[in-house]
Length: 299
Image 1 (tube, one colour):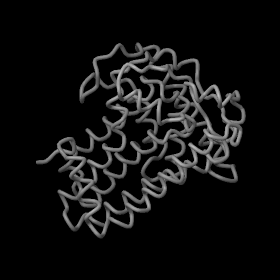
Image 2: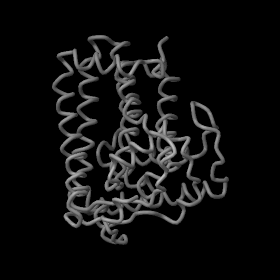
Image 3: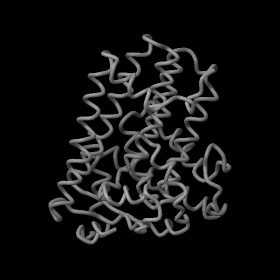
């Protein structure tokens, strides 16, 4: 049986762009990414002060060591879900086209949803200016680092594994592909850990992204799933391509998990009475220290 990890990302992209049933969703996805992420962020970076910027670091971030070795896993957040699409197309052929198109469409919708926060209040974290590898040079050169809450990386990987599970279960193949679903969830956790190890995000960003996903699609990411997601952070043994790492110890891990869970719950509770889903996140950003965007550009 073909594994998701064995699927070719370039070949899947070729399959997506040459399949008429997927072109519309693919076009909408790229439009959302360009307009709601890149264009918006670069416009804000070119015009400091246009949108307020909050510093969203948390004191517990220092208990997670900076580890450049995790950058490859971090950069896999888009290839990850593309491989899942490839797996679905290979497994279900034409029967999987509609599900794959919907999968791609909802990925674009994540960017549109997150931009409801970004367009009104940006956020950043302190990250080391590490230039020890070409991957980090690219990150520092092309990422203004102004869209931390909610973390789109976390939103994307949560959507990837939960949507994958929902599609497979709808095809009555949950048991058949149980190992692949478990592997997808583990990889989503690994990518979430990676963005903390390379200091692209704070633990606050993880909680905010989890809340965003509960509001985006509560049936696929209810609080019960969010609880399991939190409990898995830093708890999985070093495998599945993870670098051997000195992780936060058991006590530190418990404190980190508690912070993420409590902040997630705070957002969920505030969201029950808020006029819009994004208001709890905007309130958090307004309460956070203001960041000088000119200084942020140098990070």
